[in-house]
Length: 115
Image 1: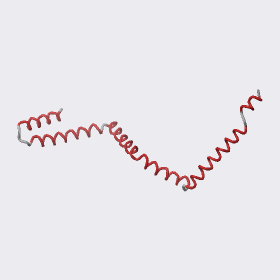
Image 2: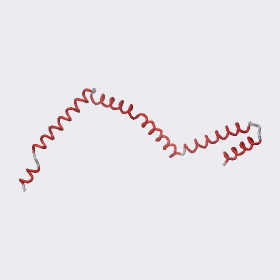
Image 3: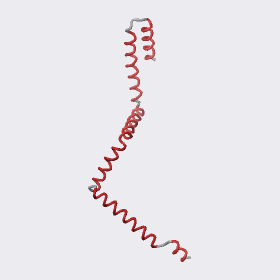
């Protein structure tokens, strides 16, 4: 049984794996040191990330703001305010034409706003 385990688990394989991993970590350490240490590496990676993902980050922040507004009911109030302003503008614009149709549309807009 022990012969089977020793043939399945080769010490040289794990030694070579450990040495290879050590070489990779040494390379990563050298790369980070060449960038100016951890601070320099983080600054460079951050700059690259901002340049690559700027549009996605902006969209995500806009979505976050929208979701917060929805949660606290601010969006509904803003929409009601915009609706009132648009109705007032339409009523003023259409109602000043001096026509019967314009007056009817102004009345319709005013009734819609009140609903």
